[in-house]
Length: 432
Image (cartoon, rainbow, N blue to C red; front, side):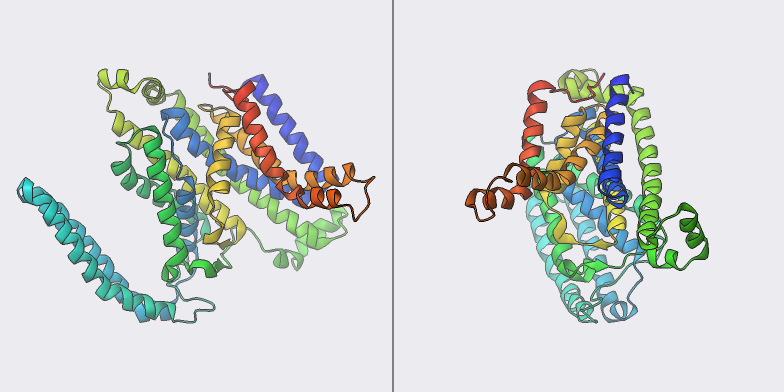
């Protein structure tokens, strides 16, 4: 990292310290944790766009898959639901596998002019056969205590394992999608990934037997202590007394956030180290050559589609890890919270601001953009109250300005993007 980059990170650290001193240390550590997770997502997008020039607008879907994996790995299974509809789900899955196998066999063995009709016939037959087992099983599962469960549950394993599993699930989905969509270029790939992302979000919203849908999954296990338990632990009580903390509940909340920060920093450090090693390796130089001129790279014997698939899978796996970590940090899985503004647009702004093709720039962009996103609303409220002080409380203009302060963050995001594209198109820390 250059001196310029180190200076930017020092300024970012000073801003977080200022939040701690002038607002609250709990707020500061909460922002830090989300900045760290956003930096991991930005690294994933940077691997795709900065390394290979892949325009993936489906980040939201892979993040949601990572969050879903956290639920399926860590939540305890629901025995009643498995007894009621588990066998039906297993049979449905087996029918799906059999249908796919039959389609592959048919396309390899039948004459060319029969491939399309045979595929259509097998898809239709498989669809109706799967429904025979699937629909009754769904109804029985969702009828089991729907206010609290109504789904199959998970494996009951430690939630930290779900971080790695989230990356693997997202990588598997990316491989399947990439085999179909990576033949497309530029805006066509963007449209395809956006559509696939929306399909993933629709599944996690409405397949209640799997995710509880809009009812949300709450009470996910933690990799760190609970505040209530800390406040009843003698060593923590003695520690807070030694520090002179007056509010033990506030101290417990801050301690939990610090524990999360340490865990997320470790993961970010590992991902950043691996990303840097990959970027500086012969593979990384090859990827940049493909990005800059894919036709020339192809003429030199490089398998462009295969290399694009590798990069696409790696970037989506990183986003899946970040999605699982975010769900862990929230302590719940909320499918309706996955919106393109938060999980696609903001991540792209982070990469553009930090510097496309530079991993340190992606991390810096994650910190800067998320900090501005969080602090823009309180800053907007303060600014509007300050400039409208001479006005009466019943003044229509004052009421309008204060009421619109919440939209300051949207204005700032647009302004930041325009300023960066005009004066620093290569980002704050440009690619070397």
